[in-house]
Structures are given as C-alpha cells and as structure tokens.
Amino acid sequence: MNFKLVHVFLSLTLLVVFTSSSYANELSKEQINKVLKEAYNKYKGDMGGKNADYIKALDIVDPTIFGITFVDTHGNIYEYGDTKQVVSIQSISKVFTAALVMSEHGAKFVQEKIGVNATGAAFNSIIAIEQHGGSASNPFVNAGAIQSTSWVKAKDSKERWIKISANMSAYAGRNLTLNEPVYVSEVNDNKRNQAISKILDAYGRMGSDPLEATTVYTKQCSLNVSSKDLAVMGATLANHGKNPVTNTQVINAKYTPKIMAVMATAGLYDNAGDWLYDTGAPAKSGVGGGILAVIPGKYGIGIVSPPLDKYGNSVRAQLAAKYIIEKLNLNPFAQ
Ligand code: GLU
Image 1: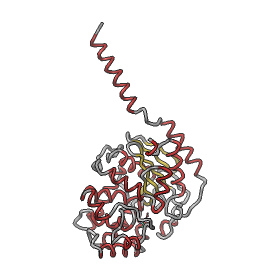
Image 2: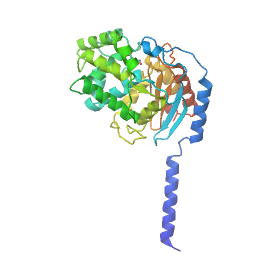
Image 3: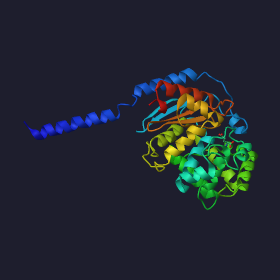
Image 4: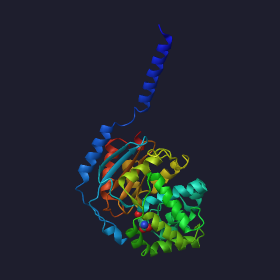
C-alpha cells in the first residue's frame, strides 16, 4: 500500500468535507434567484406610496424604478429589475458617515456625543432635540447625521466632502457621483436642517461650523446609488467591514456590530420597531427610495423604488425585502 497516496487522498477528502460543511448553511444560487424573481414579480405592479416632494427634484424621479440586488460575503451578486438605475442615497448616507466618525473618534464618542437611542419622532424633528437635553439621540435622524458630518476630521469643508464621498465609494466599490439637480434643489431649500445645526451648535455638539456641515451633509445625501451599490455597501457591513467585491477592509471589524445595532434601533425612521419586528434585520432607508438591509455575517440586500409611505420608507422596497427575508429564512433572530 502506498501510504503517501493514502495520506494525500485522506487530506483531500477532509478538505472537501470541511469546505462544503462551512458553506452548508448557505443558500444556493437557484434559491436566491427564484425568490428575488418572485419578489420582483409580486410587487412590480404595486404603485402604493408617493415620491418625496419636500425636496423638489425627488418628486420628478421615475416612480416605476424597481431594482433588487442581493450580495453575499463572497462577492456573488444576484439582481432583478432596474438594478442599474440610480437614485439619491439620502438618509442611507448617514450610516456610512457615522461609521467614519466612529473610526476616527471611537465608538464611545458616537454614543456620548451624538447618542444611540431612537427618538420616537420624525427624522427632521426639532422638538426631539429639546426633549433629549440638546442631544440628537442618534446619527440616523437629521440632527445626528449633520452632527456626524461635522465631526469628520478635516481642515475645511472641501476636505470633509472628499473624505465622506471617498468613504461611501469604498463601501460601494466604485466611485459614486453627485446628483447635481437633487443637490441644488435641496441646498437651496434646507432651512430646517440649517436650524437644526444651529440648535445643536448652541448645545456645543457640533465639530465644525454648523452651516458648512449642513451643506456637506446635503451633498452626501445627493450621491447617486443603484440597488447594486446599496447591496454591496450592505454586504461590506455583513462581511465585518471588508468589501466582498473589492476585498478592501473599509472599516475595522470591531465597529460594524455597533453600526448595525443603531440600524436595528433607528434605521427606518419612526417605524423602525415595526420593521425589526417583521424582519429582524438591521436596515436603513432614505427618502430617495432606497433601502439597504444587512443579514449579519451573510448578505447585503439593496432595493430601490421611489414611492414612500407616510414614514418616508419605500413601499415596494419594504415589501420586497420582507418577502425575501421571510422566504429565505434570513431573520437573524431565527438563526
Ligand atoms: N437630505 C434629506 C434631508 O435632510 C435626507 C432625509 C432622509 O432621507 O431621511 O431631509
């Protein structure tokens, strides 16, 4: 008997067994494609909700856009519908700028200076700041997001913008570009956000000039993303901060659980509790019509469809995400 040959054979067998067992809990390509297609077909005709119109340029975005993308932590991409169509990222940008601030100042700083609790009020609430002792409560309401932007280390607002857009681009794995009409439309009409920044400044919570920070914040909200971009960004969070498509470590893995915890608490505006109850998934929505959901350790889901419900969450994106998470049994609390 050739012992060397037996040894090689046994080692190879063990390797195959080990590799397949470590992937044993993963879904097959067929399962994923089937469910994405079902979700798309089930909801493509649902025209419930209405585009945001408080930012005028959002009101004229094609409401029929509907794209669904699913990315796993190996970088495999599954897509259905209008997955190359872009919309402005809006509130979803808040996740990545808060993550950048966490990298620069630490997790405690975000918890103490901005907060990590739900407000129970609308995303642009001013009264919530007063009710919480001059605090924004969390980085995903406008107050906390403008604060995050102000704390990104930079010598001026130009450098701050370059860092913020480069950071989001690293999560998406491509150079995200500005939606100029959306930016111009909002920057000329963001008086409420300016007021929020001034109140926070009065409470000593801002890291840079409040109006400058509001302008940079408005610009970060105007970056264009597709459902594919959102899914890759989500998969980067799912993959402990390493973009699974570009293999770049975008953020230290110790911060991603913190970011996802805030997404679970306050990701879908003041309807975040209902969303978590239904899906168990950390997520973030934006008034441009995007939703990004994360299945920690496994998948990023990006869905784009502009019409919103009364809370500011995309109607079809929520329906499709809930369908996919349920059919593929992805609720993290059910694992
Ligand atoms: N740029 C928007 C605002 O500040 C973002 C809001 C959102 O998506 O929730 O009003």
